[in-house]
Length: 171
Image 1 (cartoon, helix red, strand yellow):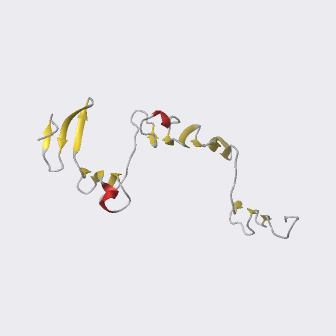
Image 2 (cartoon, rainbow, N blue to C red; image 1 turned 90 degrees about the vertical axis):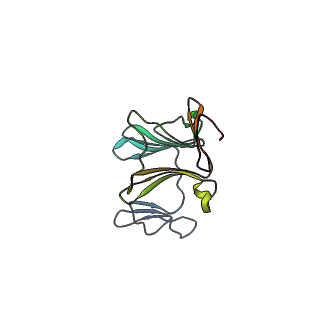
Image 3 (cartoon, rainbow, N blue to C red; image 1 turned 60 degrees about the horizontal axis):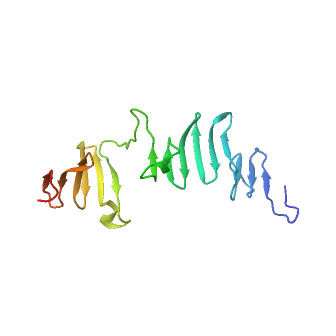
């Protein structure tokens, strides 16, 4: 089809059945060169309980009838819609019994959970938890002191100088 105001093609139907909007050579069944706006759902054909939904400022990803991922102004929720109810709400993962988060690796690999102060130098990893698959060694790193608490009370501290303090906070 053509725009009645000019000869610029805005919709293309190829002889293979591909449809292009804003492109004259679509590579897929539907290809849009530009922005797409939706009011609510994008469904998986033939499977009405698997979809992506845009609602207000929230996106919900559902598979097999269960909400799996929620993204909104509060953060990201995996298997939860109430991440704003938690103290640290940027990423909340709700897990059933025996559920959790896996960081997978293979022999020769090391994986990290990093805590950064900046995006350059050692400040990219001011603190971290590491697991090395070659040595089966778990490491905890802090550029300062490390504290261990139980029942909201400090029970042990490792100072930056390497001293281990038990049931006290100074040497």
